[in-house]
Amino acid sequence: MSHISRRTSSALVSCLVASVIAVSAGMATQALAAGKKTITAVMHSDLRVIDPVFTPAYITRDHGYMVYDTLLGTDAKFQVQPQMAEWKVSDDKLTYTFILRDGLKWHDGTPVTAEDCVASLKRWSRNDSMGQKLMEATASLEATDAKTITLKLKEPYGLVLESIGKPSSYVPFMMPKRLADTPPNQQIAEQVGSGPFKFVKAEFQPGVKAVYEKNTDYVPRKEPPSWTAGGKVVKVDRVEWIAMPDAQTAVNALQSGDIDFMEFPPLDLEPVLSANPDLTMNVLNKFGYQTLGRMNFLFPPFDNVKVRRAAFLALNQKDVLDALVGNPKYYKICGAVFGCGTPLEADVGSETLVKGNGMAQARKLLGESGYDGTPVVILAPGDAITLKAQPIIAAQLLRDAGFKVDLQTTDWQTVVTRRASQKSPKEGGWNMFFTNSVIADSGNPIGSTFVSARGQKSPFGWPDDPKMEELRDAFAKASKPEDQKRIAAEIQQEIYEQVIYVPLGQWFMPSAWRKSVTGVLEGQAVPVFWNVDKTE
Image 1 (cartoon, helix red, strand yellow):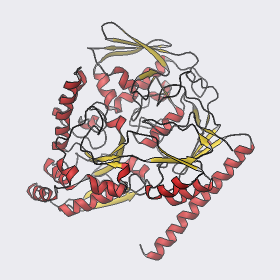
Image 2 (cartoon, rainbow, N blue to C red):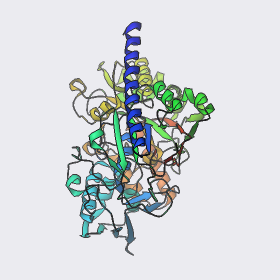
Image 3 (tube, rainbow, N blue to C red):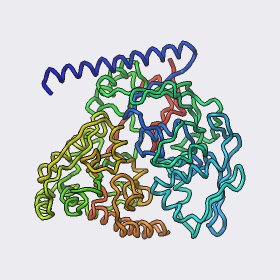
Image 4 (cartoon, rainbow, N blue to C red):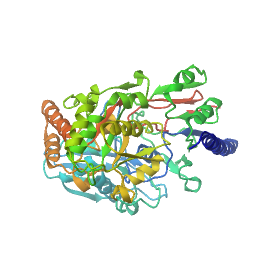
């Protein structure tokens, strides 16, 4: 693209974004004039896929927490707490009974029933790695009356509550049975939950705007809010998510007051934003994110473990983190698959990732692998600032190692849809994509989305590694922390040897908001918009 055409394109984008701001500001003004309190937010990505069981994408998870509720939640001490339901456990640890609290209603006015929740748990469990393991240990899951869910195990299993109360993707959100009966590889037809906000379908513009209104029938718990547990008290009437693909435009809108909240402003502008007396900046997720790469095991060249290892050896964390984050204050080179600072931290197998000394080995192994020059199709989202750098850096490192690379730039929501495709790369499929995982999603071998290696039952990439599944089963049954740590280290070694996925470091990202906005909560699945208030 020529310099002139780039400038013209940039101008067109700016005009489009300005139009969106103007329309949004106009609508917000109308809402305020009508007595409605409105929060306007720019999230880390635009929203298109709105079924939180169809994709683990965090923007869809965030949407899920607006619309849906969960049986259990997890608080800031990593303790599981009641949310929609209380529970009791039999003395033999084989029967878990969940009792729905009174007054729960779906957004269409019908009561929430145990039958709805059983169907929701079953749909969630088909896609989620923790859910899959839970169902393997389950003898039966039934609605024994309108308010009672009874789960019976084949043998004692230590992660029942942690699975149902997991805070991040895939989240076991509850939905009406008529929606939960939808196959998990198809998107649900409606957005009907029992959560603190209602989705305004009439105002939804995929990729541009999503609107939520306070659910006036929602009865929050009485406990203080803590991560995904406690009282979800909504203090505003309306929340609007506005997509702004140009980060500088979004920052300008935040500084001028046209928007109230920006999830991930560019870190190179942090000094400017921190100096603005009208703004607050804070890292909401203190445990941070792991950024990672995933290869497609179904097609050449990554159906060959030697080729995968060559690619693994070519990659290093520092180059990726410098491009993604830049400021070492906000990143950590970390070879631990399950996160640095966690009980399962280990460094086994990570030397080339953390030291960046694997390129010579990569070139040698690629030459020995029989690689025939098949292009590596890398999906590159150009609209998400937290995902733009990784594919670009990886593409260059792979080229340096001797790979041919086809870097295909789209938007993130297209990546979210396309990565689920099992078509060949020539038919619109892919060979590699990158994403981010909160430590809540990658902190143990059962909950971590990309550790699962069950072929077609695993998420995008579909690795098939029976040894990995034997190790994961052993971890799930281990009761002593020292045994869990030992097995986790063996799992990490297997991940690196088979290149199940490639951890590329830990990073932390501050959010920014107007000081007129108060009550923004910290957590593992943030941002959330309950407890948030706004003064004019």
